[in-house]
Image (cartoon, rainbow, N blue to C red):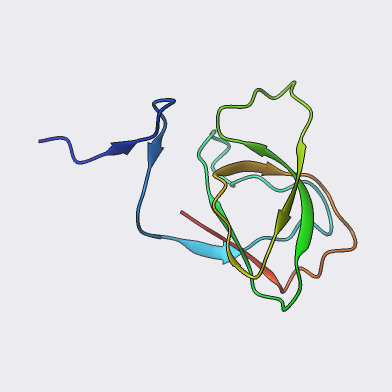
Length: 97
């Protein structure tokens, strides 16, 4: 029995976080270390919204990143790329998938 969950675009998504880590985009672009197109969610652990330029799952590498505001807590967007942003404190963002 297949227990995967897919979104409307056919990408596999999860209702739980099996892995969480620090999302540091202050020193360069951020993607998952596995080099794949896997998506992840972003958690803003600060008290203020953070604006990031991201590529969502389903966007092509040639698509310009979109600017998105992440309020404190878990964001709803399934992201696969975060553009370098030196003004973001690396201790305030986490990724989870």
